Each structure stands twice: as structure tokens, then as C-alpha cells.
Amino acid sequence: QVQLLESGGGTVQAGDSLTLGCLASGQTFNNLVVAWFRQAPGKVREFVAAMAGSGGTTRVADSVKGRFAISLDDAKIANSLQMNSLKAEDTAVYYCAVSRRVGVSTVQSDFEAWGQGTQVTVSS
Image (cartoon, rainbow, N blue to C red; front, side, top):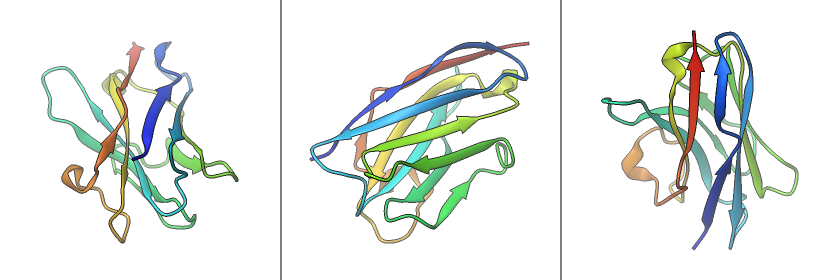
């Protein structure tokens, strides 16, 4: 069973950049789909970005397209979410998750393992 550990959250100003990390243990991301979701206060958790662990296919939510990018290291054990031009509405707890399903899903119920979450706060 893969275990996930997020890092990199914090408090930044609007317009700043921040990179979140997600480290896998017990298994690499190679045969998995890895994704980021976020949950803002009082709102449901929503999809942010996902990619196939084998590389190639990525999907990004419209709300962050052009600002956020997801990537994997060559060893397929560390995943990153690069967040640029941050806005106050990006404030949320960000979660890393993995799925064994074929295809890059954006549906939360398709993801079997989740990290504990990391807080991102963007002040305007």
C-alpha cells in the first residue's frame, strides 16, 4: 500500500508562487495516477491536477489552468504541484492522492490513497 506525504504548504501573498511536494513510500508512482485535490473552508473538495505515473497524460482544472503544473521526478517517487500567480481563492488544504485505475481520472472516489493534506493560504 503506497503512503503519501505532502509538503511545501504555507502562507504567501497574492501573485506569489509555491511548490507542493508529494513523496511516495511503499511503491513508486510508476503504475499509478497521481493527483492533487483541494478543499477550501466551507466548500467541497475539488480536483486540481492529475497525471499518469508513467508520464505523458496530464489534466488540470480550468480554475488553475495556465497557473498550476503537475510533474514527477525521474525516479517516480516525488510528485510536485507548481503553483504560480496565486490568488486568494486558491486558499485551501491541498491533498495528494493516487489511483490504480486505468486512465487519468479527476473523480475523488477513484483514488484509493490520500496524504494528510497541506495548508496553502494566499493573502490578498
